[in-house]
Length: 196
Image 1 (cartoon, rainbow, N blue to C red):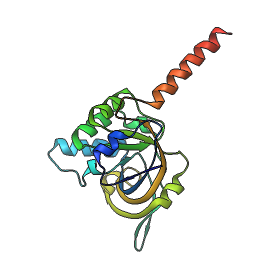
Image 2: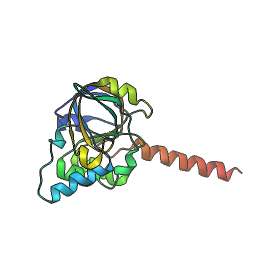
Image 3: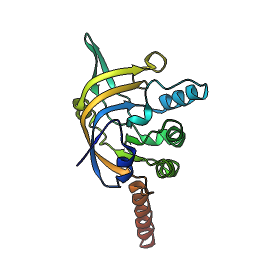
Image 4: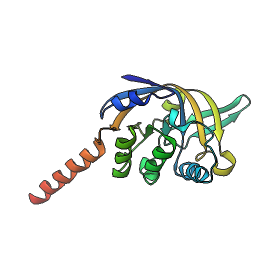
């Protein structure tokens, strides 16, 4: 298990390969489709992002949060389906320099090409393990666009310790586990149909 610390080292990320198991310690932020859209639109208007997005992993997540006297607490933070962000990630990497995306279900060719071009990875986190992820959050450092987007879609900045295990399923060398699995499924389906 490889431990990745933030702020991210781009050269360290480039060395990661499909099937590598990693954990993350440091800061990560959440961003779903509404947050991606808003951050890119604000940049187009000349506004700066509220945090250095290239320094930290982007977690495709709509967390369940609870407001307490001392601040926010993460109740659950499972991954959301990453395919929803497929239309944004190439531009996101180009504009903000994001190198690590975490989610579930994989992403497509457009993102794979961007990971290759900009030296990034996509890592998968187990769906349904939101409370396990919440346990790795040591502190909710900040929240951005809460009024505009609401709790699930806001950009949350978490300080985490050994968040994982995560499996690299897409890398900067052009390999995608999702693509390979889809290819094998298609081959098996063709074989099964031919035997009917």
